[in-house]
Image (tube, rainbow, N blue to C red; front, side, top):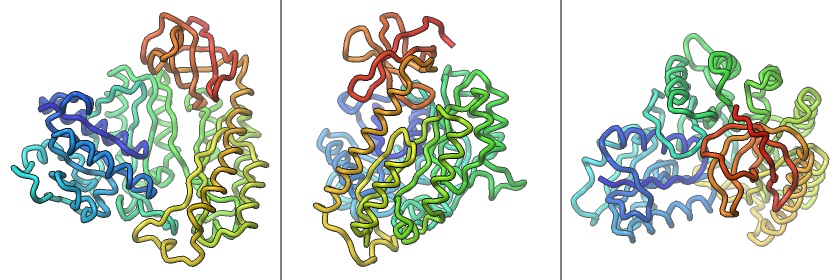
Length: 430
């Protein structure tokens, strides 16, 4: 069969979609784009925000309209299958645990779409290595799933279950396979990656497994996905200094107000976060540090918001992902008093985004004339340029005519254009 896969949301979803694709290819199926008249379209949904829900439903309806048989999976499908069942033409709803069994589900597609079938088991399935295929130049390797935190705004733990870790032998097998397939960068990802290994016997830690991997595969560029502030291990900085780990860290802040952080149950205050960032930059001044910010949390006053604005202006960040708060089912924050209007959240988000843009431009300008390690992704629309991503997570345009997708090389930043770094190559692949 011809099958297309549409992925929404986080890097974990991207990793799981690549595993789904790998399994389907091994099963003899052809993977095509959504515009290539697929027989079946699989929508890997996201539910982190209300906007994610809307986009997931939109993609499902678009797939139904195309005439394909449609399977919905992912966190939205896991949490609220009843909502998705209301979409006429959706054939099958599969929970997160079903992603590893997609070949079986294809055989079980119902003959008609009068009623949507569903198989939504509890999400706490054990992790095993899976086939992997992706047209991307970077591989996303899921080494952990689930979350043990209880942030009051987040529904993801209900969709993913408790933290589970991929055993080290599976990780090494996966990395070996990805290296053999020619990937130059592997992003180690998880829902709550800082909790890696705590439930394994014998116990392990994220630092221990990363330190082992980077020493065995020095030719691979490894990158960490998002890690919680209170779980950051400063020994990672030693690996970064040795160029074994990308000089890029994503550490979610969520708010610059202690009052709001406490309501969110984030487990740290702004003083802790400030000290963390300052210590990282004192040891690795060029590291790129990104963060997430939720604006308009229930009860967020003007003073709370202004504290957040002052805080993000003061600390050194390379980029920020800014989201308006949205009610999530099953969460404590949904029942909190003081929900802000959509208009108020929009005004505050706009102000935060202005600072985010300024921070990003400032960081990019600091990279001018510096030597950067990039991996080419694809040819740019503009003739004579290639899109590439640097080790410090900058989207770059490399001025060249003879590069290839997946090629790794050194470049030098020469100009800033529309929040992208224009570079020229040193003409030497890594």
